Length: 620
Ligand code: NDP
Image (tube, rainbow, N blue to C red; front, side, top):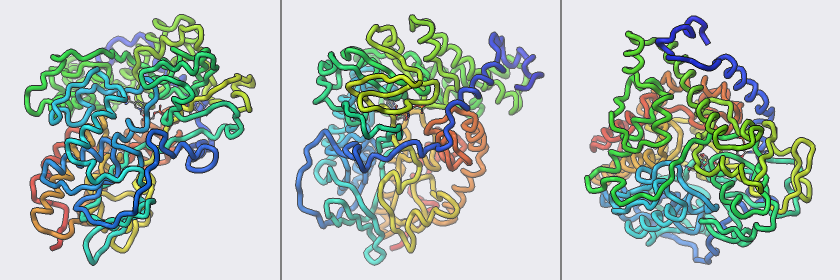
């Protein structure tokens, strides 16, 4: 911290804490957690004892004959991204769509994650897709898992996507057929199907991941991953009632967004619950409630898009110099009120200071404001958790966005229950498994059951996310991007790969607190581009090398990417910063992003949907 600036109360307002002490503490906590092996601390779940974590517990496998046929469009992925893409293409009159999905139904994240208490911490009215089109009012302010699965199925039905969907099917390979100007897609079911257009919507984190804790393979108790919840063992359902646990000692490993939701649900029924914490999450007030019918005025056309844009304007990083923050905060929840402190509007700072602050001042102010946010979250823990030692151990010491911020109304309260025990691993994680339990700090905790809320493989590589290779014009995607790194146009297409689009990935797109907002804007853009291409009667559409180069250059030179990288360098390790090992912006989970912010990116996409197909070349 610049000492001279510290004296400037006009810039910072009253600072009633010691920023230097906090900075030192954050550094200390980070150093405690960085592991030399980085990401390699995790083991894949595709093979070995845990290979069932790649399987589907929710739908019985059905036999079917391999397919040989052609559709206008193939969409890989049946989560919210794939569903939105199908719906937005349908809106443009393109209805011959085949979805290919590994799971047994639509839903993606909400198909797999059926753990008790599963919910989304983004307001349902802006998170759930196509509410206006479906004329559906969410039941709660923050939607629960079953509702999100049901909405997925409803979209599948209303937009005719079930008709040609291939569930329980993984794509193995996609090859561009130059002669016939189409993609040939091969699957693990022996299908060889073709499409004029291939769209990939495979999410960002779908493969369950496990820490390679010594002895994990030898544990003789019950063990499962949060995304493959074993209701046969626990009893109950997504709403709770886990009566199978009433005589069980249960361990939950992992205190990320999933752990926060799992812990209160398990605490209700387990005889004893041990929560093994490596790094505490920040836990803001959720404010869950049933939504009365008049919660949102859904009568105005365009209400959902407007509400999403309003939310995005309120959760924009930086000093908001380039974003007009509307007076009215439509969503008005923990996210927006936190950003109110974190990213103070520039006019407020200018009014206080009597002039325009420079970049260094703004940066220092953002650090102080970040401390204000996390200080108040730490104070909240003291207010809620009765045992001061437990409260202290639950306090996170890192900048707010170093990890995905968490929200819950019952998580902290769970630690006031007699049957719930926090096992703070002092940043080291669980040391080892024995046949009968786990070891932390040299002490064994005997357990009947361990629930691994340890997250998902995080990557920005499309071949890894999709799980197959793309063979384009004279090259495959891995080789195409090997030398100079990822190359996209608007984050959704690339040269040498005609008639191919990606949506939903982090790569060279934008940062969106509401991930479904990003998905929808991208799906609409792709739907427009595809329908413009179809109207022209063209055979191929491909991003030009010049357009790709220009987009990559724009991303690489965006100052926000440099500052984001510097921010994550100082963060406690996690999947955002390649477990503390990020050596460049390309190693971040966010990758390089469009520097103008989400709203500007969406505007750009909308402008690009005007039919001119600028940046693309088409062949007849
Ligand atoms: P995360 O990767 O966020 O969390 C994994 C947890 O496992 C961390 O607490 C991690 O600790 C812990 N862990 C890993 N290894 C060990 C170990 N050896 N010993 C002890 N603990 C360990 O996964 P989640 O499933 O929580 O979340 C996955 C994604 O889904 C995130 O992006 C999340 O934001 C999202 N999500 C969103 C929700 C929503 O409401 N929108 C709801 C649920 C999930 P450490 O932090 O130290 O690495």
